[in-house]
Image (tube, rainbow, N blue to C red):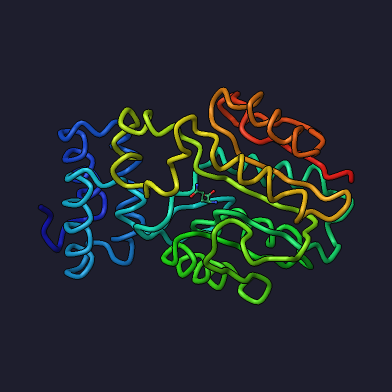
Length: 279
Ligand code: GLN
């Protein structure tokens, strides 16, 4: 435990050492983030910062992921509050935003209508609205806690007036058509959940992960809904898990959607599939 009156640099070293002893791989990086976030308002660090830091360190050492401890994670250069009801936004999902920018470059200043299904923190919709300044959108999640978190995140990132979030089961009760539909749905096969990294398994909500027996339940629901909710020529950009490309492409083809592109994440895995509705 740290005491008030330590210098920032001594505290950073002490935190790094504690993390290292606990077997945390990125101990130097995590110590820097913890200090920057919680104890950068004075050097030597003051009483309140020490209390914050000790509390955070204890939670981290007890196994809570870093960004959960800090209560927020960055996505697309924006900060998103996390709650137990929301998945942590992951850098891989930024591939969907890149795809939207690539495929809608000529419509950057149109009043696009955007739908985000399974919105979680709202990161996909909110990042998209930041990039398309006249667009507006709707984010839907089965979890009321996620809806509350996403609503707060839209305000926090300056798009509160262009984003509405609603509790719902996919598109039940919605009649509107959209220019762009985004989704990073739950896509882990139920039997694979037990083998996930504990950081994910124990801290991300099961509802956001579990894609049913073969991991594809959400894509079946999406395939049924997308043709009814896309404008003619509208795009759907879907995140997929490892190895799901062909199965998801087949489901969307059966639903009458046309595959436009597949996009790889920074790790080289196909992460985002782009479909067009050409009725
Ligand atoms: N859309 C959110 C995200 O990309 C939540 C996804 C989810 O809960 N499966 O982080």
